[in-house]
Length: 241
Image (cartoon, rainbow, N blue to C red; front, side, top):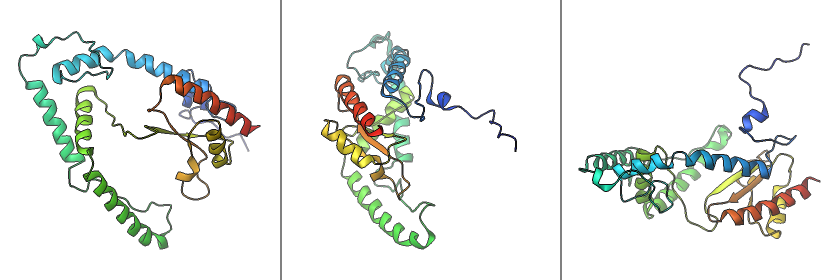
């Protein structure tokens, strides 16, 4: 039988990993590769900061576009003659809020996926319906609508938006680790080394879920993350040997 031909559109692991990112022989990214990708992304982002600040200066002058608390714009308040642009931005953000995440409305739903057997879907759907109602009640008692409206303002002006949930770990990222079969023990080893994390398998359904770690990153400084990554790299290396 002739060897299977590679599709012209099929990318190699190195291409899929992104430019200047070298995966290991197992296809996983190294800690240094992730750091390098962050530096590249940060440099690319910096090219847009001046333009974003100008956009905010014309449409939402009370808020700085780059989020660093300092204004770096070529536009002065003298260039703003009326409230046409700010009003248009606010109206579009309000329309997005009413259409996508209406306050008091049911703008999301939970239901059993295709992996749930047909015979088990009814009780699972009933449980998810209760979960949906509980989530909805918590959201309505929170300040989510205020924060989502601010996010829609950013989306209209800058083209992208994000909301931040302030808790102990800040925002989190799921990191899959090929070659690690017991991520529960790995998370315990990491915690013993001073790196708080959770096993990714605990968030997967069934026995065939991915193995890895759930890492918090937004509540920590770059220096703290560097120390944590060095410790975590040593823990992972010890587990793989």
